[in-house]
Length: 232
Image (cartoon, rainbow, N blue to C red; front, top):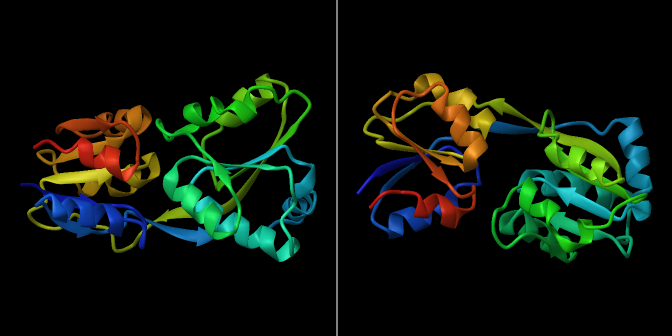
């Protein structure tokens, strides 16, 4: 069995750790990144006050949903009706449900490409869409929606910074990386003989560009996909 390092931010890797331990693996949790909320700019506050004018709101991660919904709840004592609340996957959808809303999300893929295939985004010409994400996030989905004729607003609600405590414990033979930023924060601490399991093609490409050791591409950052990618 493997000795696995989970590098998700604090509080976000426990469910995966439990599944790995149940499968017989040793597990360490050491965050590569820490999450820092961003203050809401005046222009972004104005957009949230117009929340009822949007066709859909997309949360790119559980972090985005947590921070964005908290900001929205301060401005909306009752949620506006008629919006599509979109999540990238089940963990993000769970945060949306906790706010009393009904999310839509892809049942496989768990990335922007899968979200774009959701039925509510098929016809978006002249409709407004809000994307809630971290600072410096990926622009792919916004670009595709604009190509379809939508007006897209993007609000960053947090930023990811290298965790000062990040390290690779002794004896680790497998590291799970779920974001490009996470890899960049940890890359110089990962020995060449350590296997890296990367969440999706984009993350795997970033890892392979600077890691001499084996790289396995998981289908997504979803717990089940990360677990399935682990050999043995």
